[in-house]
Image (cartoon, rainbow, N blue to C red; front, side):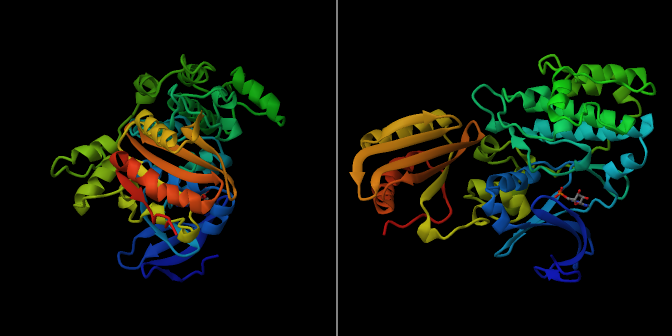
Length: 439
Ligand code: AMP
């Protein structure tokens, strides 16, 4: 609980509680220098660590800083104390759109206005390689002028975390809003899954209830899989037609965002405000463009005129904090090293396989960029086993973590210092965090 009136980091005066998520509370706050209203999401580090949500939290933070758009809730700044992480965000004074619909269903023109803004935000996210994956009414907030703000990127995934087949493989989202292929866990195209959820939002705005609903979850999934829904008689025929193209269980045949935007119903009264993009003063350094196609980061890079940034610097520059330090554990106990690389996953994999061969470790390739390396010599604490995991940001930019999975820690550290790290030299772009010591 943050005390009302408390001044956070000498900058923000904390106000009332706005809402509560799973492991975070959101407070109103005011910047005491500029007077600007903000919302501060306070995340309990301990809770995040305990339930293994580090990756999701980092992803939420990094994704928010990748997408800056008038209809996407902006992340201004990230701060951290010993026990908490503070995400300073744009304040959505109008609250949840959900509350409006809860009172009464919306008129066609009003629903269309929100749908247009939602589609613009989603289209922008997709152009940045970001899929929301948890679009629902509860994640749509309003600012003081009634403009839509998409929030909660907790579940969004970067396009680059797609598998080799180009499809996302985590089953997530909220039951009533998820596309059939997400439920089937067969891997899915994030863009088409978001289209489905946008369709559900449009339906809810106009009908005041969910299109696919049942008290029995299995029955509900069945309705979703077969696109079994009914359209209320007051739905305009153009909306009914549009929804039938959105609620196509086959994602390949489902309408795309571009085609939705081209429909006469969508275009009616469509008047998006051109949004401000920061002027490009000079061309971005080539490697930065190659690393991230992100304007936000590129602009932050230019504004600060910095060089020698690592991946987390890049991700967090626009939010002002090095994410790699957010969850710093006791370095002495650290049993892993991390580095970023500008090489492809297959180049990194073959390099790691070479090293394993030299160290006489047997290599097994697992799903999701995981390599398991195992020794046969029984050391003091059993055979040494090392895992290397490759996380993809873009096809030519990866974060690699090498950690001990079993065996003697001292033996592992010695191998890291004497063999592994020197051998990785030519593929490492930047080492992350403090490196474990060999003694
Ligand atoms: P979340 O943890 O992001 O789901 O947020 C929980 C609740 O806090 C939301 O449902 C909103 O009611 C409220 N909230 C979150 N972010 C903001 C914001 N930026 N401005 C106003 N209210 C917010």
